Length: 154
Image 1 (cartoon, rainbow, N blue to C red):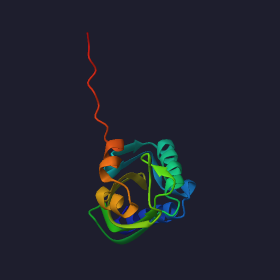
Image 2 (image 1 turned 90 degrees about the vertical axis):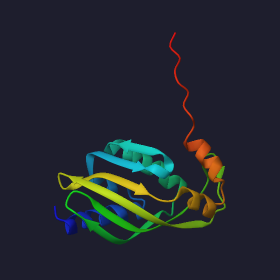
Image 3 (image 1 turned 180 degrees about the vertical axis):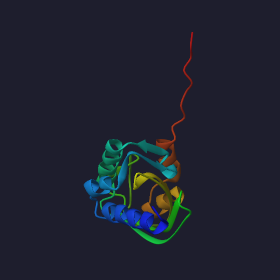
Image 4 (image 1 turned 135 degrees about the vertical axis):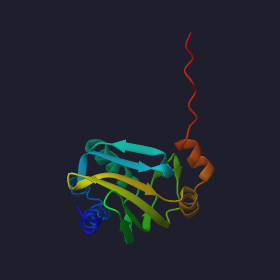
């Protein structure tokens, strides 16, 4: 695939997610799709797991909308940037937001396999998301990044 074809595939994914159309989003994802979202500390692999995560995500962010403003690629990676808008509804991270829509810059990196999207790295500023949503960054981080205790072997 050339860079233009890769971007068209990514646009299709973004449009499907902006419509909260999980089925359409899965059509452009590889069977072993890897979604990494460092702000949420999450890594999800496989179409079924990605579909489940999107279903859950759209319940909490029903107006999710991504607008891609530019892209660059080298054949292996496609980098995109733009804006994501979403309103945290209900309880997310054990917290209730202020009901205002957030508008955040976003950076995305994609890879491809078999003419499908093989991976997506979705990067945005968690602190800015929290500030706009009216929730404590510290409280969210405490929910997301719970320290793991070492197993003690006897």
